[in-house]
Amino acid sequence: MTTVLLRSPAKLNLSLEVLNKRDDGYHNIRTVFERISLADEMTFRPVREGITIRCDHPQVPLGPTNLIYKAALYLQRVYGVKDGVSVHLRKNIPVAAGLAGGSSNAATTLIALNQLWKLRLSQEQLFQAAAALGSDVAFFLCDTPFALGEGRGERLTPLSIPHRFWHIVIVPRIAMPTPKVYGALNLKLTKKGDNANILLPYLLKSNIEEVRLRLFNDLEQGIVRVCPRLAAIKIRLQTLGIQGVSFSGSGPSLFGLMLSRHEAYEWHDILKRRYRQVFVVQTR
Ligand code: C5P
Image 1 (spheres, helix red, strand yellow):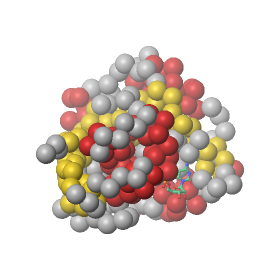
Image 2 (cartoon, helix red, strand yellow):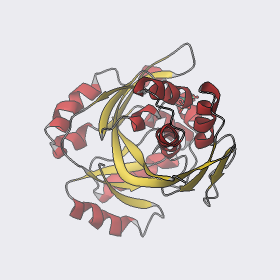
Image 3 (cartoon, helix red, strand yellow):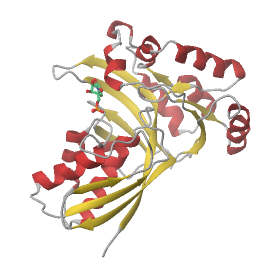
Image 4 (cartoon, protein in one colour):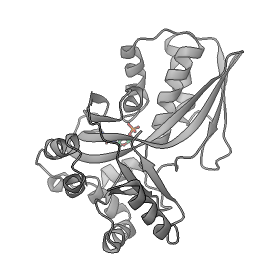
């Protein structure tokens, strides 16, 4: 019996502009996604029928609200699949942290089941499924470490950035529901400049010093309104001397952009005494 084993990586947002609110309740954004080495491990096994998820992480739902379940169910319904699947998830990416772990799991499920169930879906069909499942899912279907995301974040343009960046990622144990963060935004206050295009030339040249100065996230305004303590954590990280500190997605994860692997591990040693969830990651 075939078993498919895949890594399901997390992402960071090096920039995230919120442009406007749409009639469907979503927001148009422009974001630079970066795929990182922090990843879950997923095993897919074909079964006669049904969708079963196994995971020993207490925050991961195992039923129909899990995006893995939704992705499998979508394929069963839209493509008339009768076969089932049993999925084992080894969760390494913190849950509801702004790192898109759930979205990545959904994209990995689409890729795995396309293979396992021999669906022969085109890229277009996979992207259609991704868009139906969530705004961040499509990025993980692109075989690229960096991409510009537009629309809800699901319209993607791969970016050819040769550099592999090192980061330190700090995940405070605070739940940040994405709709609440978007809901707390005052759109009059989001930046109106074309920030991604200002950042991109420095990214392409791998000029880390300049990139560090230009990381930004319009959602920060909503994040600190929902949880003012996160503003204090960001300031504390900056005061310690970490450069290029920014929130990923709708938080609570914060990351710093490092000059080297060495610098990342130095900060890891310092920060792990203060925060329980600190990771050194690289572009992947
Ligand atoms: O697409 P996804 O399910 O990840 O989005 C979760 C929620 O985040 C949406 O229901 C919406 O409230 C908000 N959102 C948004 N604009 C986006 C992405 C997400 O308003 N571009």
